[in-house]
Length: 138
Image 1 (cartoon, rainbow, N blue to C red):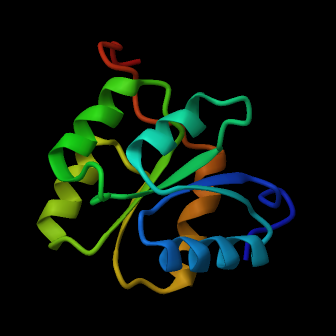
Image 2 (cartoon, one colour; image 1 turned 90 degrees about the vertical axis):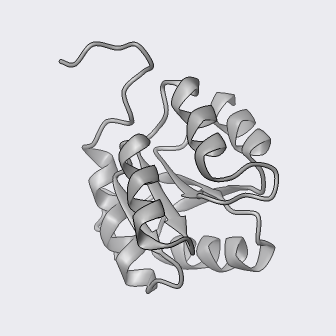
């Protein structure tokens, strides 16, 4: 469970399977996180540009409207992203490649234990999101 410093962190869950999104939101809320959900890449981009920006994004690699390399490209060009935890049922090498391309904080292969997700999220407090496109390394 998150400690008192982590409670109230806003997590954007980008997952097109409604049951999975609800289960993830329930588990995170029970652990003290605030959640918002988006079921598409368009919905996720709207949420990221909205007034209540998430501290971390839980991103399914294969959404119904966009998936795989195209999804990675869209999010890479967006810039100013929060730290990402990538989730997917894709083969491990596909998840690993996408996680590296997105500079993901963590990558979890479905199905995964809720505790693995909870263990990954506190690092979002101190980890910057992916670099902006064209940004020079620090």
